Length: 486
Image 1: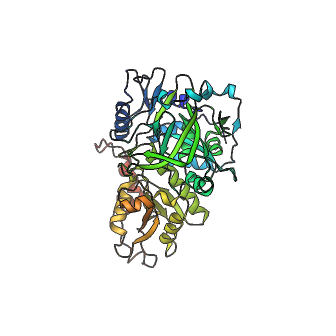
Image 2: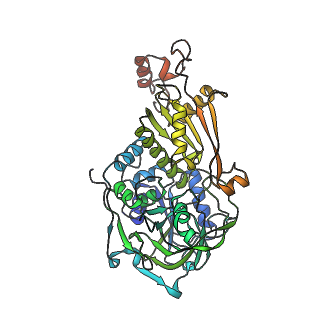
Image 3: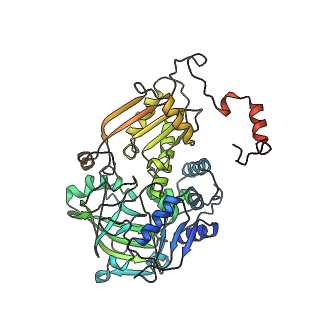
């Protein structure tokens, strides 16, 4: 792999985005109470440049960076690519890097770690010293963690997990958050800590490098520290915590250390989520006791404002889920031509392109997808043929409306794993993570004669000779049209 010029820290990323016009510096004072959240939400809905808010009311010396990866341009910048790179180009680069050799992290001395510039221990520990925002009006509280990594480790297997689990500030020493049973942290808690009544050490890293945040969000089987190294092309720098044996990204802006309590819960929520709705009611949830806070000088807190698409939660999760499913299907010999999850589906629908070489291939794809580790994160799979551009919603929607037989093309899977965040789920199903899933088979049956039975698609690229297409495209401007050639 050649040298990659990806930003090594959140600060380098901000500077790169400002330079390319993909971030703006806001000098005027911004209120942590709703105003910052409103700015970020508006940015997400308009696809605007990321706001770097340099002056926060009541918190001199701190800043906010909102919507870090809510556009594909900023995703390209995070990977060290041209901001104008297309989604297929970004996907191909991601697959190339994640198919390379793992790059193990390196542990550095605490004296060299920027996240140790300020250390709060004992009676000095107070989350209220951080500029924790009220992200949405109506949220159950101020949320410390919206774009971050919660770091834990299985005490027997040694598995390290960096995951994004929302965290609400309850008081100066306590946070609470939603941890689903099927998540990596949920499995570790139910497998080991909760049956033994033991506390689980954790560390929350805020203001990660964009690639470390990408790794924390990705459903990859590769451990997140190694995945970050593979994406960056160099080892990620880690440093030991102050109060437990976990290792955290040394260049993060803020680190919060503590213990997940096994026998004590406080209320959390509601919170505006990636679905575009506030769906999970206030309830007693996993509780985090804070034992230490460390942070950089002039620390920047990152904010993701989830809601109506698209924000980075939808964009990154849909991006990584699609690529991971593509790798899974290809590893099983399925002749897929691509997998795409549109971020505006709130990463609920997977679109799979395939060469329909045998009967039942769509059902095989759905069973593999829903039965995998990825399955609980989406509940719809649409399978189209290799002539349909999976990145072109017009073509996909046309295939869905004209090729999916209402009787034979729709297959419902009942009593599967769901999440408490599905807006369409009943309150009972949300409480117990009960779901359902559906396959939309948009393939022509393989036993239909291609000449007499399969309808001919009437489109510019399908019914005209290549020489006519080229002549029209090359003469498009001469005809007097101002639109771009396609």
